[in-house]
Image 1 (cartoon, helix red, strand yellow):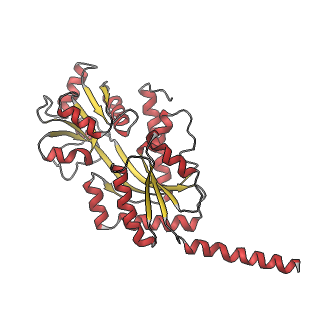
Image 2 (cartoon, helix red, strand yellow; image 1 turned 60 degrees about the vertical axis):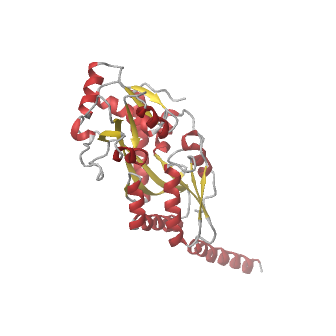
Image 3 (cartoon, rainbow, N blue to C red; image 1 turned 135 degrees about the vertical axis):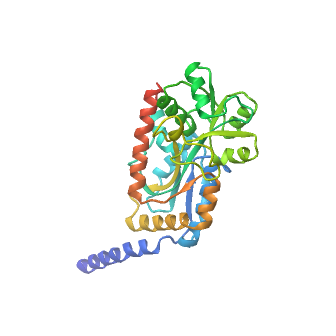
Length: 320
């Protein structure tokens, strides 16, 4: 009898495991992100959730968990069940945190099963239309001639904008005066009011004002000129060969999610990103949509962590 019961139990377990993977998902999923509702991350999360629902056959409930530079959402994901029903939209902030926070409550690589990249975002170097700086060369020349006088606004301390500014400063051999604001809207108000000389901001925040003639873009930080602003040069071609500063968004889950579930989620993300409507919507936010394999995303995040630690060290920024 004991042997019979053991055999039945083993058989039940063997049958249950594949059925669980094949049945995924059989209930709604949660997609966390660490920023305010209505912001860029929230918009991208909802675009992806809407499209992924079509291939997964279940709703994806977007849950903003703002605070601590996105780390509240990252921590919640790292501690969630590794069943694939909790995923998280990660941004550049996930790779910056290890450079600025001495003790995180999670490992930014080991505690996550990376699923796929979604999009990269270049930044724009932007001035008031009436600014004395007509070109990026003008701005850099004055910063070199008058060290510590040219002011730069960003969306806040420790943001991708701020770290991009520090990377640019190091590459150019200049020191800008950093003026942190609370979000892109604050920095835009600052440059429109001539409180700062220039700002660094993503296309989603400034393209409409550039097109409307209120702001002027001096440079774009990506590897190529932005299609909607073909006259605006890249940093690499204008002032510092090889200099690029890109923000990114990707999706991850807790570590130890079953491989079949990882494959299912990766396929859903890939299909969503390849959809013409999604690509168009992400491009309208200033992004370059591109999915990836889980391994490619893991390598990118690890490389980004190393990059921002190096930038912080060169800028004399101490982890708190």
